[in-house]
Length: 91
Picture 1: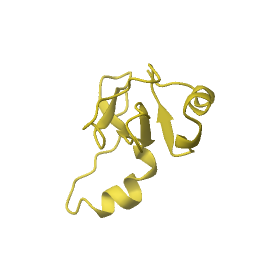
Picture 2: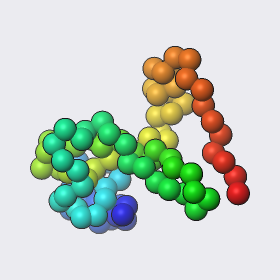
Picture 3: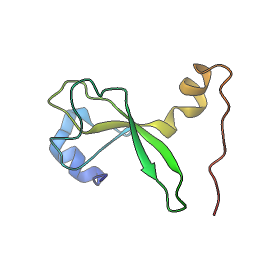
């Protein structure tokens, strides 16, 4: 479950910024070795979307994710040469 920004900032403080979100439980979001892995969301029409990337700056800050959407059109697309991109399905 994604937490409200106010809750994330209160719990994680310096680890949070406008490019991130956190999940519940606040201190147990993922394990060592999961950094770089996806946070997947099943949208209301049943398609899975990658909405975040596990991004702990240290392993005491488990549960913080970078918002994938902020990087698709620049960094991700630029570094996945030849990848095909699909539009978000509509209902």
